[in-house]
Image (cartoon, rainbow, N blue to C red; front, side, top):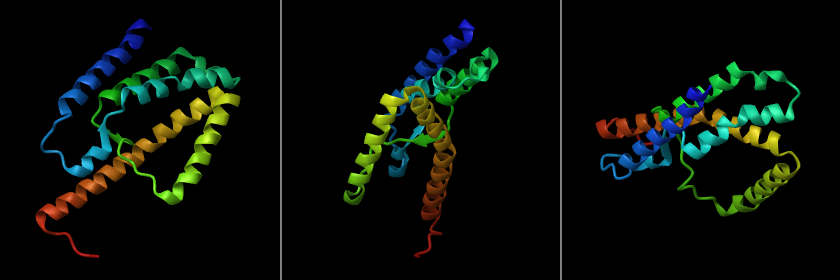
Length: 157
């Protein structure tokens, strides 16, 4: 088990090294800064805790089974060092009309974190995992759009 537990910080270090070397990449298009390459380490740490959090809140032994936990940890570790594009929320701008609803959602999440911390953390981790296919699709769509603009195939709408 210690080898699998050691895999996570090793992959985290490799991911950080890649992030640091890609910081000043001159060839990256402007839209690419909305995405990370691989799962960021803090998000990976939160996702890696999902089986533990579920085992605390659900009376199911599945989330305590060593094979399930090991598979989850290995999967998250490899997502960190993968080339999978994931959303980067660093440059997100919230329109004025969405500020109040967003504040209500943040307050609701904070309330759930206080009343049901393990289920809330599990839900947030699973929501993040569910966003990965959407980020891949969004990245590829932007990539195709940029390629069409480069080749001159872009048609005005």
